[in-house]
Amino acid sequence: MTILTILEVPDPGLRAVAKPVAAVDSDIRATLADMLETMYDARGIGLAATQVGIEQRLVVIDLQEPEEEGGDPVRRPVTFINPELLSVSDETSKYNEGCLSIPEQYAEVERPARCRVQWLDGDGVRHEEEMDGLMATCIQHEIDHLNGVLFTDHISKLKRDILMKKLAKLRKAG
Ligand code: ZN
Image 1 (cartoon, rainbow, N blue to C red):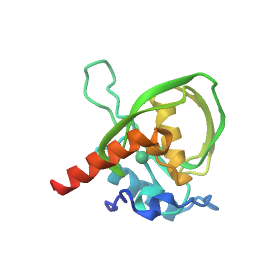
Image 2: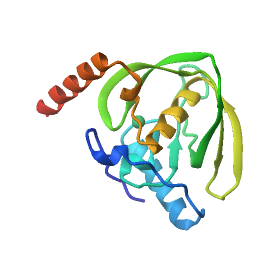
Image 3: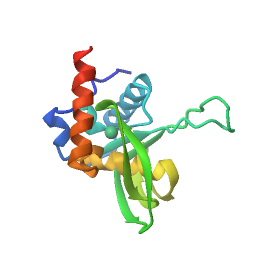
């Protein structure tokens, strides 16, 4: 497995719209394995192929939540091929989002609280599930990436400018 390079803003590659995967094969499975490895290495909970410069509709998520409150995080990776939002709730929720492509910057983003998602797994089997909580936020954030959209596109220009200034400062400090 390979740790891939994660693109960071303002890399234009992050604005690419990824293409649907035509066939689930060993190449796709290898890419998903590399993406998971890259995500764990970067201590993230989600990664879209767009973030590693691969223009295919692939997402990996692992919320790494503990089995019980206060316990050790448990790895439960989920790989999504061609994930699609079938429907979203009118009810919204706010979550303080971050992104591996916008290092160490966070902002409260309002999104639908629940969503119904369909996708293919690594064996090409179709899944459909109603998601809520952090999982709903995360899959919407990752599907946004596949469409060239960043979480900072969902906040005000003022907040975005502040966030990008903080990022520039952080980079200067090395
Ligand atoms: Zn992200």
